[in-house]
Length: 298
Image 1 (cartoon, rainbow, N blue to C red):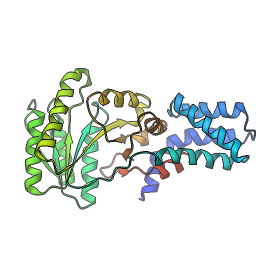
Image 2: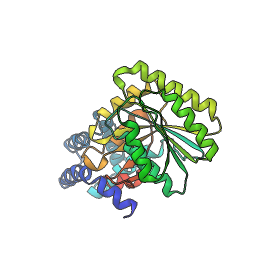
Image 3: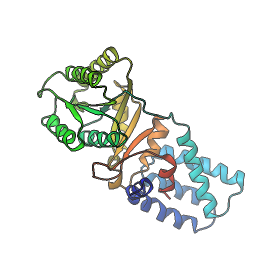
Image 4: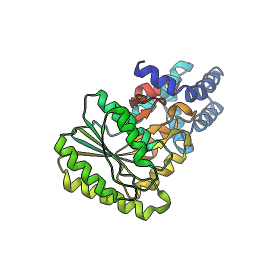
C-alpha cells in the first residue's frame, strides 16, 4: 500500500468531517461574512482551534479579495496554499546518524508502541536499531518494549523495574557505540502527576547522552494522541517546561475526526510533525508530508 493511500485512509474521518461541510458551504456561492463565519466554525469543529481558525480565515478573506476569487475551487486552492505556506515555514528535521531519539509523552498515548513502529521503520531503512527501556517506573513497560524488540528484531537494553533510568540509558549508549548502532530509541516515563521527578529524570538522561555520546545526533520527540484534540496542545505545554522538544509523533490519526490539531500544533508551537501513525500494524507509521496531509483534508 502506498504512503499516499495510507495517509488518505488515516485522515478519512477528518476529511469527511471537513470536506462534506466545506463543499456544502462552497455551493452557496457568495463569499460574504456569513460564509467566512461558517468556514471558521467548520475549521474549529476539526480541532484546528479557535484562534488558529480565525487567523486562517482572515488570511483567506484578504487573499480572496486581493485575487478576486469567485469559484469554490479557487477558494479551496487558496486555503490549501495558505496551509502549505504555514507548514513550509516550519523547521525541517532530517535525521542524521548515529541518532539518539528520546521519546517523551504522557502514559496512554501509544509511546511504547510508537517506539516499536519507529524501530520497524528504521529497520526498513537498513539501519541498526537498539531500544532502551528507560521507563523503569511503569509496571511492565520494559516487558512491553521487549515484545516490540522481538517483533522488529531490534536489540534492547533494559534493567529491572525501579532502576535508575539514566543508568539504563548509559548502558544503551555503551552498547550502541560498541555495536555501531545507527539509531538508539529511548523510552521514558510519562508520569506528569510528579513533574519534579520527571523533570529531573529527563535532565539526567539528557546530561548522560551529551556527556557519553557527544558525536551522536540528539532528538527529543513528543508522542501525542490525535484523538485527544486540543488536549495535545496542553501536553506540549507541560513537557515544554522541562524538555526541549524537536518534533512530534502523532498517533491514532486514523481513529479521529480531529486531525486538524496538526495545524493548531504548528501554529501555536511552530513544531514539526515528524511521523504519523496511520494504523495499528507494526509498519503503520509514515514520515509526515505536509502537502499530502493538506491534499487529504479536502
